[in-house]
Length: 432
Ligand code: NAD
Image 1 (cartoon, rainbow, N blue to C red):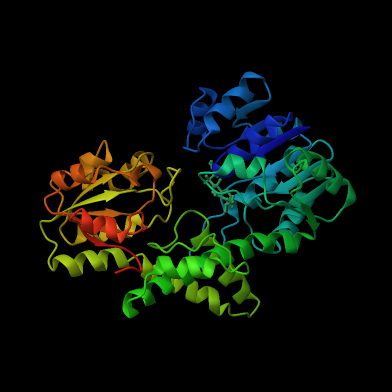
Image 2: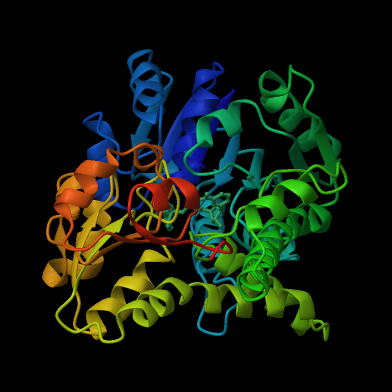
């Protein structure tokens, strides 16, 4: 099939590469000329495990190309995905400027029947707005489909290739058939393709993210209660996770959720519910809890040292989660800002996100070449992202490098016993 994907970011690039991998001819379009140049040189603009190899193979075999020229891409394709960003607007609602702008450009370029698929996360009713914009811009026949994406950064290719489910909001049979055919290689293992109306498809994405964000905030509050009553959240987590109605996934407390999706999608859902006069009280609390959780590591550091001026803090992990370089809404950002504000020298290390961090903090912090280098002369270590390579470090070497052996573990990657035995003063989440 001939597929165009407009927006070549974390979602568009992965989707484009995976559709090419299953034998389709895919053109990825982006307005960012530098990004397209990078991709044409065979380099990746983002870090995502396995992506470079997938893109290289499909480019070599001629199934995957990159362009800034949207009109030609539209003419050459039957299925056109919109995978541009839907950032948070000033009032918290999803900013649909890019989605509707692309829809209008697609309409102008159309030369026959097209299936226009919204893959961006958009509020209920957007497919109707996209339909309206296209109707105004063309006389050619078309279908609008809502196909929200559920991939996780860091495991995006696996998620896309072997999805738990594919959700398709399609209101005509022709578009449904085309979408079922496009996705059939990805659902051979039995994952369901769920066809529904567009409003339900659009809402499904927000409901999934809202549920996951709620689980995180809930566990963070459980951890905070553990700290005040003297319980251990690891025991509590295992005890409740064994209940099959609850399950073990997503029960890890930490320093709050970040990333490009949960914060903005929770906000957007609160907003579009309130526009229909519905106050989504649980989500309001989820957001409040998350904001507070992002300050907890700093509060613990301040409480331990009293005054922070002149101290040096090592940070392990800048990305909002492991296996990505993405720092959008990362909990490391407010922590580092608070530390800098308190007169602390910050020495940070992240395996992939340093380039992104330089764009945010510039020369306000130093960037270490390894996790050990970050510890040199540090008064404490704060662990913010649970990269695998942080899990089994040489503890003696760490202690020797640091000025004082104090660890604030925002991800509970060590056990309290092990840390005590090695002579560290160790603070974590829900286990103090
Ligand atoms: P991103 O910011 O990484 O990429 C968006 C891309 O769209 C950018 O490269 C940008 O240059 C391009 N773009 C913007 N306007 C354009 C235009 N007019 N023409 C061509 N290109 C244009 O965003 P992302 O993380 O890939 O997210 C895209 C959408 O998918 C969002 O709605 C997001 O909520 C949703 N989503 C993201 C994830 C994720 O893990 N990142 C997962 C599921 C869904």
